[in-house]
Image 1 (cartoon, helix red, strand yellow):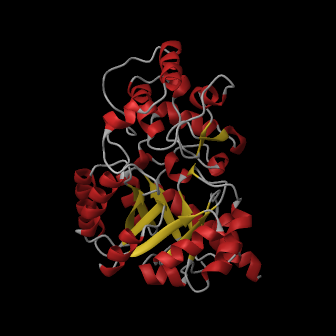
Image 2 (tube, one colour):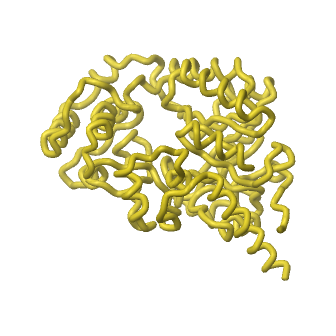
Length: 360
């Protein structure tokens, strides 16, 4: 079988050129253990939770490559002050959410959701980063934003810095800030995504980056996609949607059923979850916010606090029509539950076979 190691694989100590992003710590660890580079999405975790997770990753993975991802957008409030954010939310937005609660009979259990446990702020971000700086973390990815106050100290501690970008100008900014690796994330991608398709974006980012390694993200699902990414100049791919179909992800059965049935066109980009563009599987939630009668979603973190409690209650009380998940257009390539090891084995076999056909 063709060896898939790229210079970036050699630099990081990975067997396969696959970064695997997941909000499940179990899945991220499994990705690293089976040859990829597991990246745990830690943005919505407390500093204490991040410290526990980093200790577990270090203990279980040793010298294998792994990392975490944080979102630190510009323009966040200074402090974690929920009362202040609540006071600024317009009444018509509250009325709309109350109408959804009544229409779908969503119980108010008084508990927050993942997005409203704390306010995304400069204060909360700095507390998260402080824990990261005191760890043995080898790789830190920034999903939004490339603040120098993070990148500089992280590099001083020997961490590889990854910046996710959706435009050439974003890559230029990240390079000036000191990013070591650039992820070119196309419109096809799940969760926070931009407006330029992966096929159009990746070669331009490669040209901007010169000797800095580029990773292709958005719509990657098969070995053919990985081979295409390499042909465009990328040294690896970044995948997120694939792991939603893995046992280690612990996807809720109702959401898993929607994912298995979804085609690429069944994903939509909505600001209704966080205020940022978020590609997700279409649901009653995204439809409600797309209706002409709905108010425009607020910016982050105001939308977080407006809907965070309700989103948590939708999941806890299993309000099936409104349950949803971030997912990219690659969702169409997966229709059954599997394991991380099986996904990586298939990708390795398919990529090698595709490259062998080219060489033949």
